[in-house]
Length: 589
Ligand code: AMP
Image 1 (cartoon, rainbow, N blue to C red):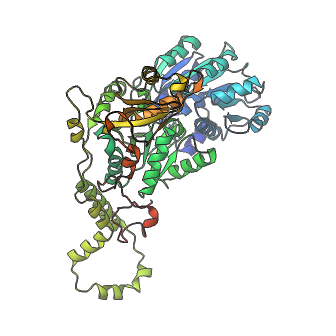
Image 2: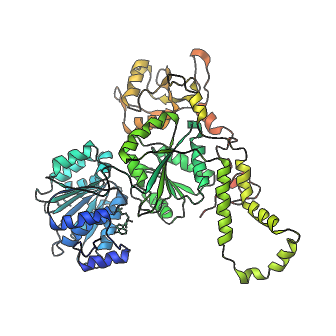
Image 3: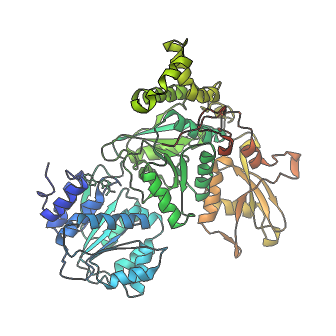
């Protein structure tokens, strides 16, 4: 295998890489570095996050940058602020021993003046998010007319996030004579058309097969009824005492809800999503990076900037709407040569979403039974035994207490002693999971008739919508409006109730968060009025007298005697374990 030096990088760069612990180039670096150093041809690279792609495009640019000129020579576009900062930080580290290299990250959500001041001082490499880059170009503070390199990093994600117009605007002000380097983990049609329109005969490189996931990742799925989704999530965490995981959710609301529940149930978890302030997001990411948090519940976008290599699990609380996002999610584990597990929690109905993903990742999902209470107890017990085995004993401090301890425990033999010590921590799990039900979804299958239709309204969620008769809404227009949101195929619509200024409708509850996010994201209007859809707890009225009353609250408030929740607030919990609390609480690591 070639070294970084043999790839053509100068000694100052190689020294910086050695400081960072980069011993050998990764596959994408082996391919891209010599290519960009020796050719001006455009480059299209298939590379997942975690493959070392940042260095793959940054190092050859750094090698060729003209430090005598203050012109902006390279623009690197990335989808999020976090990623832009990460790339700029990496470049600063790579150029630690190279004099005169100036790099700046420009991104939204923060004061533009400071960024303008930095640009005015002359910056050769600018890393920017598309929106802020356009803003700076329009203000004539960022000049791209002399650039030699344009990098589109995570191109698929930029397009997913709706930055097509910004990319068009930026590309329009760059010179014809430049080298464009496009990196993407997936190549849907939109990315291909960017490549077609803006690149000239690009060389194609691939670190792994197109669109394929990492070989180090195994993919599992658990089938549950919607009711047990959260309980299954907790069992996955409980059966893996050393879990270090991102749980992906589709919406900010779902993310916060799941994080809140986990925190309440004593897990070492927190939420990461776009409704948090930048300072809150930074703080959560820092805690997670330092492993002060074991579980991060995140939206796809918010998790993009997080650079962690040793996640044990990626959990899809719900599968993403865009199947390409699954590759991004699962690519967060199995990095840097380590093995990882990507788990999808699905209902029987959602199972068919796995096949298209399998085609993309080139691997089969393994149907995995939800851990039983016994398995969880066993794993927790072994973890405890390992801890006892490995604990360091402070001989000097404990010495003075030992005689009276021996005296007190006199009469207990070795076996009894072991059992008692272990039980101190373990009883909580044993009690909690005693008679724990099987969460695997056999019930669900029984609840589906031969045509795959739901038999009763227990499976429906009731939504409030802020338009009604006065807006000329009628059932068929409402059904049309729901269908226009492309929430999913053949979703069952239940009762519709049109009132004067607002209405209610019911939909398959598996599509609860899909529905909310679709209406939110599509920015729906009806005859000029902004449409707002919310889950309601209001009871059904009228026809048939069936009451699905307070459905949402009933679900949420259901006594957690089905082991669906640890069920006690932190404040009830006098000590992390034991203390007579029947709910197992997880210690912070
Ligand atoms: P990236 O795909 O650029 O996000 O890189 C993923 C992770 O791999 C980052 O933490 C990098 O610091 C690390 N990395 C990149 N290249 C190498 C290398 N050649 N040797 C060791 N670690 C690397």
